[in-house]
Amino acid sequence: QVQLVESGGGLVQTGDSLRLSCAASGRTFSSYTMGWFRQAPGKEREFVATIDKRAGTTYYSESVRGRFTISRDNAKNTVYLQMNNLKPEDTAVYYCAADTREDVFGIVVASTSYDRWGQGTQVTVSS
Image (tube, rainbow, N blue to C red; front, side):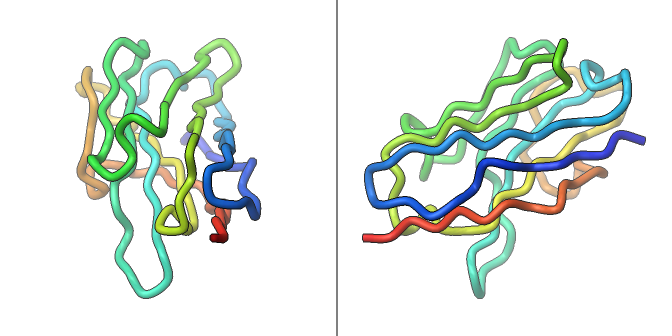
């Protein structure tokens, strides 16, 4: 099965930008709906963004819509999360995830629908 490795996290200030990357193994990356989730200290994991197999459709949580952009490069087996105008409330461990179900053709919001997860990358936004 596909394995995911996130990178690009770090410590930034309010208003800064970061781009997270999620590199996937295997040759079937283009068959997967992909998502980004995050988990802040003391909170449950929450949905951030999702993108369909061919990058034709995206969807974002209200908290990040207009600031974050999810994209993918299937030729490079990589999904990205461009994060602009970061806020302290964006501080969390960010996880990429893959929904490897073959019959999924759109975006997926529910974390329970994803069956492959990366190890996470820490994003810390200071005031």
